[in-house]
Length: 281
Ligand code: NAD
Figure (cartoon, rainbow, N blue to C red):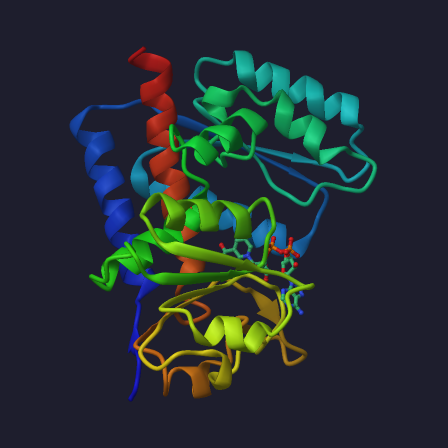
């Protein structure tokens, strides 16, 4: 069989349209501060895409591009200023930060009501117990893509490859909240191919090009590819060997054009939520 392609570009465009319509309808004056430290090219691309999405949705974006030698103290001061700024409803500090800055310390300093990435410990805890305001953008985007297939997660075998705090773990939680039977795989997992091949829904968040091959995929499965890997020829590719897996899966996300645009669309949604938390208490 040949898999149906899950069109993340179209689905994310739809989410952004909804956000734009909501912002216009309720005449919301929303601001998102985007902080970038240093000149990592990939981070620059992500930040530019986030700014473009803000523009589309009618959300003001305030960019703070700081030099790589910015001290931890200076960054903490900026976060304090943004926490206190009424025009700023969401704060996003683009990761990774330079090695001399403690990322955890910075994230914990962001007001939890402005933490649109949902990386703050208190927001992570709330995701765990299912009482959350913000959903972490990438896993939430993956859930939207899964929903677009019309397949009900409840009772399905779901396998997530990767256990990072940003993707793997929260992804597993969101699947669990929808009553999936969830397995988390990682670098120490035994019989990885076998475990993956039992999945009705397989999410790959490893960061290794072409890692998931057809023998690891069940016939008809939903395959969500979170990976973003740059090949030597400069092309982007996911964690899934698309050509062979798309012959076997029921649904599959492409890279680019799958999870990536969804992450940004969900960030826009979270920024509106942040405004509502701060203004409708
Ligand atoms: P990470 O490096 O923090 O985590 C990778 C995970 O993969 C780890 O938990 C590790 O245990 C697991 N792993 C590594 N080798 C393995 C192996 N041989 N077998 C099984 N598991 C293995 O990465 P991350 O931040 O979770 O990101 C994963 C990928 O997703 C990266 O390519 C990243 O660029 C991409 N990403 C994409 C988006 C998006 O918006 N599309 C957002 C975040 C991350």
